Length: 407
Image (tube, rainbow, N blue to C red):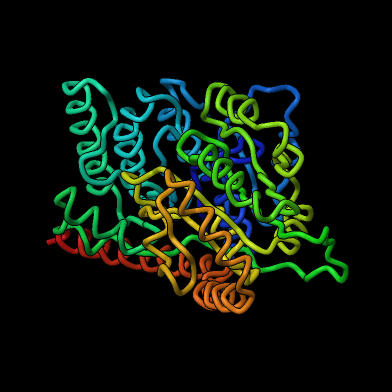
């Protein structure tokens, strides 16, 4: 079985490229995978190093934001002659807003190949989102989104989403109940915990870790305000913010603004590391007593890559009360959920966990137990099963078509 995957790929840094790098390396251990990835213009990027996948081959053949990207991908698919086409979808993944409108054209072209087309949808936009301040523009945007979501489902052989909340939203919010037979739930893969270092560095205080992309939608300013409140009674506490700019953000204005807001008294206890390598991040997770993941994305139903990165380390988690966490977690059992824009409440929950070692241990253990069956190897096996089922179905349909033609 030969698979052609269409996605962004590192060193382009967005959530789907990082997801794809893990997924296809594991799928490629059992079957042939060629990744049709985005061309990167930066001459300083270490692109060649990322093009040498251990278990999959990377082919840079399309450019984000180009009006020709559907044709470039289609042309390469014709050259490769895969058995399965697996396309990753995310808003703005293929370029700006106009590029998103070209996606149905790409799907139509790919269906012409007569190969099963599997699409993984990483974000479902929820009910009545406020996408524009202008009411007319907001209405038009919502209509376009409804059209695009319907087109993706109708033109695909099968759809993969990461949780049941996403599937329910497609069925109910987008009136796609008749197509629910082709919608499958495969969870976001989680990274297995690394070996715990023998010597964990301690500075006598609590170490708190937040990780992921630093975007306006994360509400990092509220985390900093909460930490300032919390650290009044815990002056030796350290907040580490590991992460940086998302590839689809135009500038680093938000990050600079956040750093400028740091008061001198608190800045020594708040550390911005930028992005770090996996080994360093493993150590930061092990050294931390509490993990915090915030999001302001109330209208977006998706899975959290940051949660998938830390879930197997048995660390207590504080997270936002938004769909991306509500879909997988249970407040009070395997996490503590808070409203992101309430620093006072967040500070109270930090104090609660800091002063209760038993609660930290129980929550961390429950979180690890919930995600233990979602390792990347298991997720890869679930994808391969869907690919094989799609091939069998396509084969049956071809035989039926040949039989009806001969009659």
